[in-house]
Length: 194
Image (tube, rainbow, N blue to C red; front, side):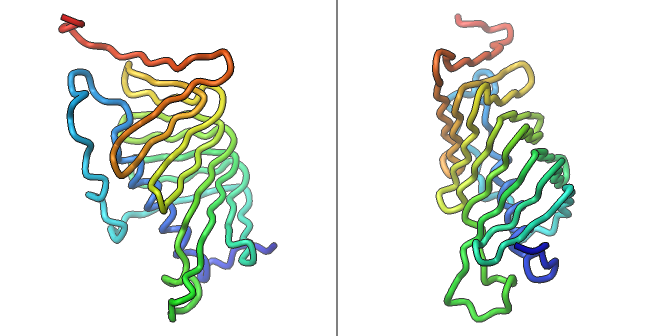
């Protein structure tokens, strides 16, 4: 293993954060009274948009043979109003054998991202907290897993052992684990359940 070569591997890392921030644009807790509303167009934010991404960590390791890069220790990634913090952020890339470009410039694509340890994601007035978050870029599925994984939006919240967000459809599933059941808290406002 070696330290990340900034020029060679910057493109896949930036693509990773662009895809993560695009995933977070999907509403995860429906506002009161809008349960039948169609999911937002998740492709509204283009990956080609030029938005600054700032990443800090105690250490960065890249292993080209294993096709991953890992940020370790006090990881913080920000883009506009979205902030991701974790103990570790590991990015797996898939090399494109048909590409004729220089290494790291369009020749690799991110296929999986794993954030581990005290993961907290702030986005669109929502907060997701979980021991581990895994995003598969090929399927567009984000999985929050571990004890008391939860998403909070205002007063509303959902929690469970495993929360799966299907980015392309906007569907969410929440699963229980052990003896703890799935929990959802929604405030209906003045209308109640009339």
